[in-house]
Amino acid sequence: MNFLSLAVRTKRTVKETGIVALPLSAKEEYYLEERSKSVLSEPSYTNRRVTRQKNNLTALIDWCQITVKDVDLFTVITDILKIPLSLMELQNKGKGIAGHELVAGFDNIKILKPTGKIQYNGFQILMSGSGCRNYENFLVINKETWFDFFARVCQYHVNFPRIDWAIDDHKPYLNIPELIRLTKQGLISSQLRNYSENASGELSESIPVHKGNTLYLGNSNSDFRIVFYEKGYEQVEKFGKELDPNWNRYELRFRQERANKVVQELIARRDVAEIALSVLNGKIRFLEQPENKSTSRKRLYPTYPPWELFMQDIEKIKLTIQPQKKTLDSIWNWLESSVAPSLKLFSKIGELDNCDYIQVLIEQAKMNDTQIKIYEDYKKSSKLPITERSYSDNELSLIHI
View 1 (cartoon, helix red, strand yellow):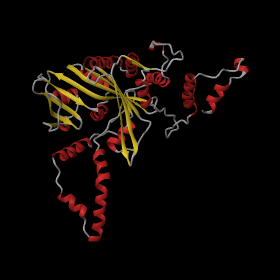
View 2 (cartoon, helix red, strand yellow):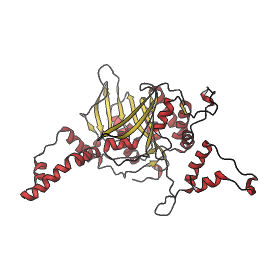
View 3 (cartoon, helix red, strand yellow):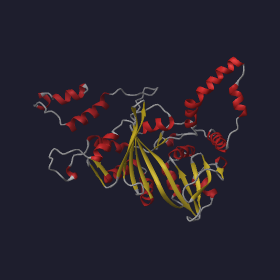
View 4 (cartoon, helix red, strand yellow):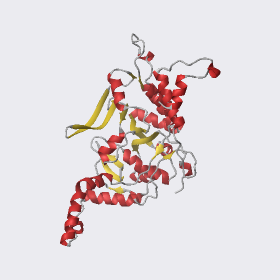
């Protein structure tokens, strides 16, 4: 406990209050601890000594799936997405999704057309999380926001099969294993009737290595689902990055009618915080055991303090963009961990034999179709004049390309 919270908790002077304060409850102590941290923490500064406020909570569009009808492919690329036709690879050989085949793409931005039983005059735009980060390059180039993009899309005959928001928590406010424990004990009030969990790990010389926890609330096929997981551990597992144990991600996944309503609200309000607060307040509340054990109505249970603090601060959240060019992290990590030691061995042997074995390997190697496509995508992406960083919606009006 820090000095400020101790001083406030133990007593207030008679001059100020006329009484000695009683000890705080556990809930009051928790809030005092959290708030006093922000008071006493060392401020961060820019190089001009201007205080920079760190945002512990940020929001991203993390999946965007749109069906557009009664348009041609050229309109989808140049008018709706506003991507230069020269950057798009037409007749793309990559994988589509059920009932659709890939006809054009730029990195992880994909355009598909219906096949088989699913037939309509139009196309489907599909952007996964990495596809959304790719597309944010073009938002910045066009000096637009996601709000602008959705408003333009909705001028056409469209449907949104799925939209995901990702709330990144770098504080973190919540402890995922603790949320799982509360859920299992029934200390949750929720309209989402199904839950599941996932805990991954690895046994290394009989010592368990933690690889992250995930809590799913809602059915995978329902129109709304919330997923809480430890993003820092996922990044280690997927990309071999250095562990950030303070990085959680909370995904709000909207489908079909719910996705369409959310997009309309984004266009109308241009404020993700108000919508997120409304959605979460209406769907979920984590609880504490009441002091009166005979209380059976969950609406009378006290709110779990970390959840209450999280819900208070989510009012400040902004929709940000994090434009990223094509990266080869996964390939590089594989080279670094699995191939580089052998290359170094032959480099050393080459010094003894006076032969550049590594160069011989490179000259003799032939890239397959997948590797050629990766190279072409990377070459196109390198032409984008974007510095990778995060932008809030308010900052975009100040950007000059």
